[in-house]
Length: 458
Image (cartoon, rainbow, N blue to C red; front, side):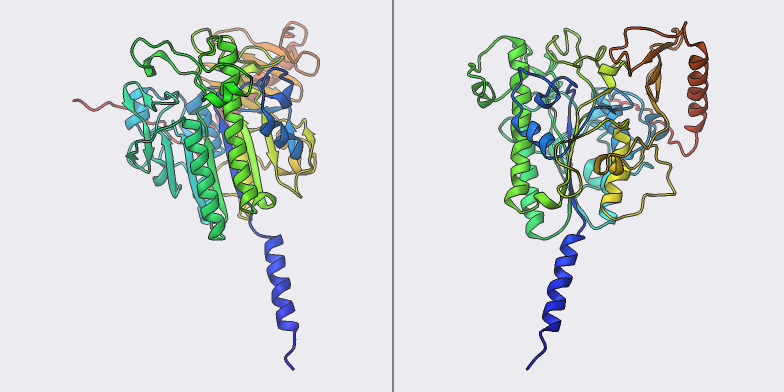
């Protein structure tokens, strides 16, 4: 009679391997979504059932930041885990740069490159916006697959940007019909299904272009720019798709985004990957509130201003994480965290070593998310063009222009940044100004030189 021990041992080994398998990682990056734009963050008007459920099943962060409040710069920062002043991508790419520029310097390594080294299948579906010159394209920077737009605020239905069709598969234009969010979500769901069947851990970067406004340059001639959503998103509110009220149209865009997030989460359920997937949903910056951009309908909640400023409304963003069995359901993290923390967190979750040959400004935020630990940061620094700020505990020092006066706020008692404390606390102003000066010196270590774009002569 043969022993059953080998069979039992093999079964136990498989079970243990499943328990300790590298988790899949799904990173969803919204575009210009405000802190006050979701139901789970207190918005009573919007319908966001899938994101509200994600918050209920995971952790909702209250003090989560981006370090620069414009699309290109935010994306370069989150993908590298390095501050823009260190990674060399400091400005919003203009039209030609989006199409043909290097953008993020080639010496920079980004998320999929680290995760491919750990055995992951990698894919990007959505808005790229960090350079599309040869060597800069997603499939040349660690992604196995790419379906999305090179640029930024494309037309959601025609997929055009400044007169050119801008939807690409890999490195080539790829014509498709449909709402951009639906296309990106369906591609992500299909990739999840395919990799699940292959039993390979996957990393999906899903940077939706919603709810970014559509500018007049991306609309058909003579057609007014307006928030674009599919008919079903209006139907969720009982509204006609021809609705002209901009606030209602904006809410429909967010509901369409929520619906597409739900579509991708459903793919995790359908493939049995829910329990072994770390899901991160954050916004690349706060809402743009200028009449020509946000049309005054987006919300930063109680926070001051919106993007591209460095006041709280521009840099404090919604952030939700779910990892069943690791992150307590229905929890709230008040730790001061940043999108720079995602790269070291993902690499750690994958069981790989955080790189030591490259300076990372992010810190692993998993202890804060899974164990309610305090912030891994002594301070967080913010910079965009000639504006600069630092948060130290509850204190925040900000200068809106190079020659402007410093402003000091205590966010514990004044989260809306209404009462400037510089005259009352000059020692704190000097201490934090000195910290900024030292930080600027440190950023020169392991820094990439920004790439200047030179348009080719036609």
